[in-house]
Each structure stands twice: as C-alpha cells, then as structure tokens.
Image (cartoon, rainbow, N blue to C red; front, side, top):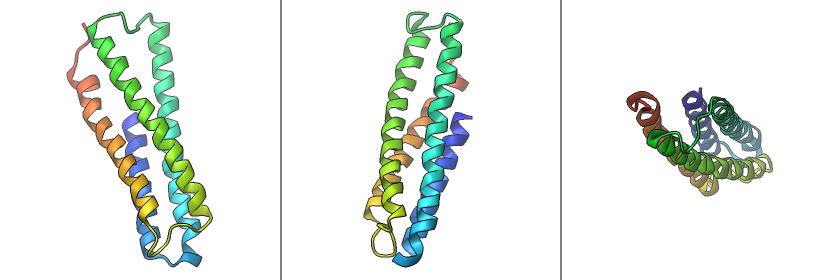
Length: 139
C-alpha cells in the first residue's frame, strides 16, 4: 500500500508538471491544482498507513530495542516519513499556488522543483522497501 501510494503520488505530480507546461495561464489552474491535490493526498495516505503500521508493531511489543533489525527499520522508515511530511507541506504550498494560477506554460520552475523533491522521496522509498520488507528477515 505504501509503495502504491507513493508511486501514484509521483505519477500525479508528473501529470501536474505536464499540465503546467502545456497549458496557458487561464486554463492551467484547475488541472494542475487537481493533479497536485491527488499527489498531496497520496502523501497523507502514506503517512496514515505508516502510522497504522507503527501502531500495530507497538501493540505487538516491537520497538527500537527489540533487535538490530527493528532499530534500523524504525530509524530508516521514520527518517523517510519525516521527508514525506516535508514533501506534503511542499506539495500543499504548490497546490495552493497552482489553484491561484501560478504555474502554466512558461512558469513551471516552482512545480518542477517540488516534483523533483517528491520523486527523490519516492526513489528513497523504492530502495528502502525491498531492503526492509523483502530482503531483510527480522531476527
């Protein structure tokens, strides 16, 4: 679920950038804002999902001190989640600006910068996911 949310969010950000690059100012606000809103909601969904996952582990008695695997698991995923929080803040700001018509053909620097950050966060997850969920076996 976490991976799907981040991938859909990255796709939506990319669609928002394409919309901004291809539409004149008077037509860009609605589609660009809509795509960015989808991406923002995906980021929020990721954070909710991660919170549910942490809560389930905590109820099961699993914390940072359980073993070395969970020390790394919590440290790496929490550090990533902090970056997702920042990404959601950035996407929220860019979404509001997009709704006001800030991004359109010839004016895309802000949305492209936000998209680059969001894609970086997504890429980091695509490295963490197999390391922590597929390859590693908790001791």
